[in-house]
Image 1: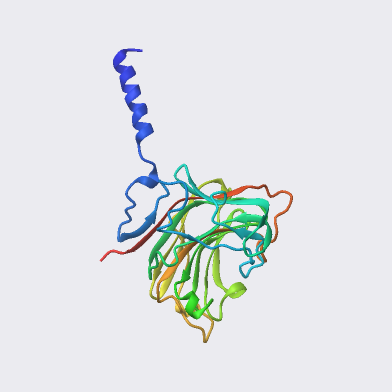
Image 2: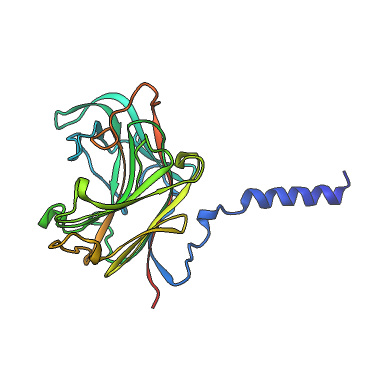
Length: 275
């Protein structure tokens, strides 16, 4: 190979190696201003300035089977992604509860909260009966007024028996739990666990829009609520990322469900409308 061509090939290879990934580019979205983000590009554990852990194995109101920990075995930064790892293991927490699975639940409560805007995350979900990954928002006044009065916006939920479907739902007083107002979004082929997808909501004072990969699939307005109920999406909310195992909705894992299972999060970004 001529020397000149060899040098060009070497330079081309170096360029490919050093060229930033999609997620490391400036997260510009026309019409929006970035207010918060975590690209998961540094450190080995979630940034404590941005995230805190919910810890415990009390079932979380859904009869879930996992114990949420703050251990790096269940949540770590690796290869530019947040890994939330569900493991099948006997675990006894400091609260005396014993579980056969562990996982993690991260939240920005007390660290970042925002009313209105675009909330998005690029996620590769796990796969298998009994898995239940989620990216969602909870009213920041939850400790004062309780749930569901504080409001909840589920940006993405998936249950393992529906590998090609995710759900977006709102919960409030009089329309919570199984009565939450939601909609599914399904792929025409393949399953969500096969690759990363971007899950988002765009939230305005009287409208919440749900997206997968920028495809708008559901819109919720006060007129969609049951008679006599209240639209409670008028105050700051905080974000949560969690990977539940089992529960009333997904059901329990079975022999075909392989562990450990990993929920990969490429980034989380929050925007507000540009002036």
